[in-house]
Length: 552
Image (cartoon, rainbow, N blue to C red; front, side, top):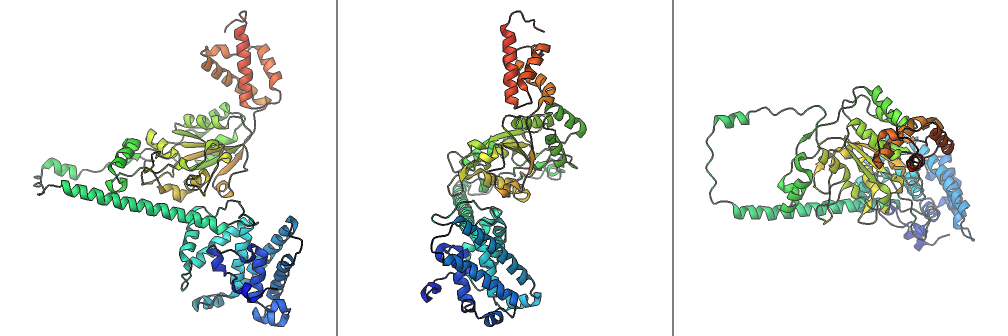
């Protein structure tokens, strides 16, 4: 068993949520100590006393006994705990947690409210929260979602301020990351530091907000002092009222056109901070500042739009269909998050640019495989490398409220939340949330932007490496390589492109019967667009090398 000294050091559930290590640094040892401390009868095998201690419930007493035996089995293991034993323990812990949650839900609501009213905390509720904590630390994502609620309850609990700053930071980080947990174990253990990751994210956000606020206050004081020293001793005499001035004052402000949105609010000196910052922000945003930027109307004839897209990309008919469905019922292009998953070289990147050009949308393309930080969302103007985010820069350049932002190879994005650079996926969590994107905190301009009308198209070779919380925010569409049945539609386009690149007349790209036969034999059952481009280029070069070949 355990001695009294070890039990006295046993952390409370609240302490665990604040970052304390569990007893023995393992879930089974910690739960074992907790059960022994709260219900000593479970060790003494005094079943009647245990039943009485849990309010007369035989089922609850049996649940506590079985959970105790499960933990005791691992505590008493002499030859270590292998992977199979850990897996069995997790399965049993899940069953116990599910049954405990069910039994607690059967309690009359008035009993629960009475306990809360008098500040009485049922030890069975505490056990339920503790098991949820350990399930989450063992990689159970459903438990991680429940753990957010547990942290929120402890952060709001009256009469107990111990650890409240840590709990509030943890809750803030959990909400910012939408409950996401990076699957990395604490060194020397088999546990994930769930609350630690959330707390770090929350504390980093609070620190950045505090730093930005402090700098704005300091810059405002400096500016106020400079203005005071330059102010004239007497205020200038008021100008006489004129009829022209009166007409200007009562002029009706024109109504923005349909679909127009003020993406970048008017800039004030207090928000910009230093005069140099004001100049840089104006240079980056120009006429977009404070302007109602027009949207881009959706096609008048969706059928014709879709038919043209399918004719250009016959092997990916689902892409224009998915985009059309995402914009259904709108008069102007709006929010969309679509991820194309398929093999390399089949045109996933090119179809995004085509869709933008075909629809009159501003377009930006970002290679996530080269990304090692979160600079996609912009960097602070205080840095030498400060710049607008990719999406904001696209809208400002084209003076539009919407556009198509493409993120290629999203699954290959690297970076780490524990560094100053952060990760691309963290930025996309916010940009792909309707509420957050409509009030996007721009680190470059220190303004709140409305990026809620941007359509996003991501590409990936597989879903591995994309956090589940990010996958939940987008529609995933699997696409495949073109087959032999698509050759007739693709070759004229590929040949025309090759002629443009080589400065040839487009008619030179028309293949004759022999060339078509050779191409079909080499193409076989299909493959990537890149391979088809190489085959067509080879045929054109061979024809160009033969002087006897007539030009069309």
